[in-house]
Length: 442
Image 1 (spheres, one colour):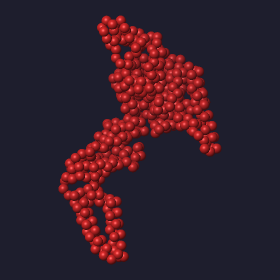
Image 2 (cartoon, rainbow, N blue to C red):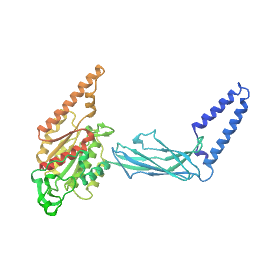
Image 3 (spheres, one colour):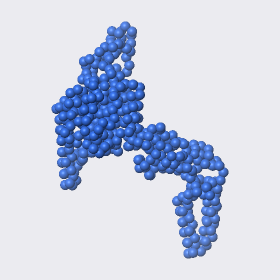
Image 4 (cartoon, rainbow, N blue to C red):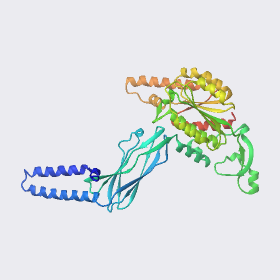
């Protein structure tokens, strides 16, 4: 009975049964066809018995091993692998059904593979989660076929839970390219260093990517190889990421909310800060202060920031910038570079908070992030086909114009500003950090 519960009939079984029934029906009208129908029926029955016996007799089975990452990276394509191993003494066709987490809403994804006797096959695919949290994978089932009339089901894996963290894949990519001096491939611009950021440190060997203007030709002539001057930047400066958890950050783009883009960007920025020997800190707020991590450059600082960002979510209240100013003024004593990840959609919403930001900007350098509404910009550039489309375009252009007024208002009050599409936030944040460092503003 246990093996019978693993039995499933395929479409091929029902189609063949329908064909034989049609043949018997035609035999009432065509003389001599009845004998052919019976011969076909008994051959079909023998094939069914053979297919059933080879699938369910003996010790043949299918095993599946999940090769999944320990944690998922939010907003990135995460590589996943399934190892399918056959213990049948003949070749089989195997259909793999994975019960994906409910957050992914995947209901039409299955995998087919052909397995020779006692061989294994690898199935590779990728998943792109768009929410942080626990992803629960259900059972992984294998439906094995020989001739195609029956399927035998093997449930080979138990449930598995994987946590989805802020984009650590993006973090590793930036860190790898930074250590190999290839950040320009991602759009990170080389900024000319001026002022106190150009203090001479020592002479070293030339490596690919060094600025030719720093070549030390006298030293190169003496040792008969290229040498460059190494300049030391000011270090141990506090760099904070202030992340707004208010309702304005709930707006979705390409499956991710603005909060998720801000989290991924602040994680990469914090890592870049520590790589440059500065101190990285974090503050999340909405109506109240949610979490605060003082700026440090210890070995476990990135772990603390990542764990803190893993748990945050947007609120439905409007953020309280007055409390943000009071808390920052009381707990951040040294002049710092602060990246404020928020979203002002109207000029009135900015004017309600501009006084608090101005007071905070007197003691620190504030970089305010303003998100481009790329969907509204696409609507404004589209070709109208109906009268209603013209009205929609006019409204879209009004929103774009108001965003530009917001940026101008921030610049007029002396704020550093990043006006960016959500998907370009990480690159633009790092570029702004390098620019401020090179200009010696902090």
